[in-house]
Length: 214
Length: 122
Image (cartoon, each protein chain N blue to C red):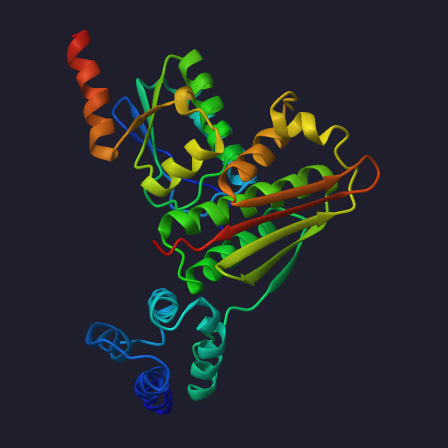
């Protein structure tokens, strides 16, 4: 009972807070008012709609400031502001968790289904390389806000490192296990890609995916 | 997290509907379960339905290629059905060649393809 009463309070507060910053068209208002707080997927989709709406009508640079105000107005129940995430990767289960975290963050940023899949696949490839070659490492997901909004994936480990990284990336080297394929694949689907690696010095990969606003 | 994906047998077809978030151990387990089932009793076709998946990375995709190759050596034709557009785009852009396994838009098309093969041969 108490839970549902708190819930029913949230949508009108959210509409009011959003309206203080940008105009709210009827369809978005309706989407907010029909929000069920138990439905995570619905919250993620709504978060995506809000991000798109703000970026179109208030500009990309205002996304995070406005989301912060929305979270304040709704006591942080929806946690609309995307948070950076750092995860230890050392086994299968952590690989799956990292992938899910990537999908959630991408959804919050307003990425569509194809972009979400690309981001999660990239995380999967990088996390797998860590588990297979370095045994342990970390994946960091963070939000990039310059001219465009984006999601950055950073993978770090202190494993054996890759001897000839250029050869791996150019496709001149094919491992039985598929390290090259995974790294090249991530390079192909990311908008920015850098890798630093040398024998004995571990590996650092950074891949950035930008939100395509059309 | 589940540790096994069930394999259904319908007459001489094996049907595997992958609903779980796939991880490597699960994929390896599935591969060996399929081969064991084929050894137990031969099957004309194998359908891997992945319509519930929203991620398929190159490791898993390659595992499917290997599964299809092994199944072929044991006299079974493999079809991967239900790949979402997002996965198809991602794999293609990553440079993964999907030539290693046959695909069908959905489960029904996969079953139709395998039963057409029946009538062709009869």
